[in-house]
Structures are given as C-alpha cells and as structure tokens.
Length: 138
Image (cartoon, rainbow, N blue to C red; front, side, top):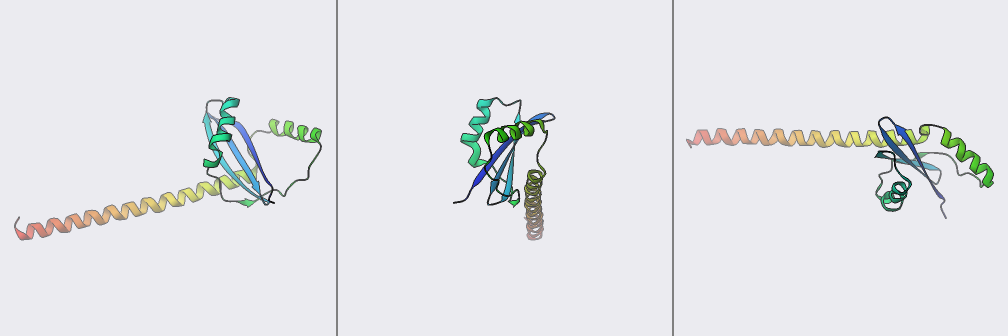
C-alpha cells in the first residue's frame, strides 16, 4: 500500500494570503498554490480541504523527501512549532510550482500562436473572396 502525505502551509505574501499544498507520494513531491486574499479563517481552510482539494491543480511530481519514520509526539510537536516560525515555502515545493507555471506558460503560448495563425488565415481568405467578387463585377 502506498503512503501519501499532505501538508498545507499558509503564509502572507504581500498583498495576499497564500496557501501551498505539498503532496508526497512514493517519494515524489507535487505542490499546488491557492490564493486566499484576506486572512483565511479556520473554517475557510477546512472547507477548502474538504470540498476543493480534489479540484486543485498539482504540479508534476519531482523527487522529494524520502518517507520519514514515525517519531514521538513530542518531537513532532517541536518540529511543527519550528515550521510555523519559518516563513515561506520549501525549495522543493517552489520548484514544483515553477515547473507547473512553465508548463502553463508554454501551453498558453501555443494556444495564442494557433489563434493568431487562424485569424491570419481567416483574413487572407476574406481578402481573396473580396478580390474574386470585384473581378466578377458584383
């Protein structure tokens, strides 16, 4: 059975509050970014996790942290406290989000290029049609 772990980090990135979901599956990390706007309340975060989690668009998986051994509750509590003090996002999740951003950028460029070519072809055909009509004396 595969072990999947997920982590949500909420922080303030001027001027909005941002949440980063990090998902680790089989030693590979993928991330998704959510912009909250105003500071999110607990119930907003819970609602997002329960209702919107499967609609999130995660980045492609990159090599991440290996699975961790179980540890004592006190140690886990201390580590959670340290992570709350740290501001920002881990570098692995930043890489995963950057990869997703690059893929979206490439996709957007190809779509806009296709639209431009299609518009150019349409205008050319209109010109040709107009020239033919002029020659026919209409």
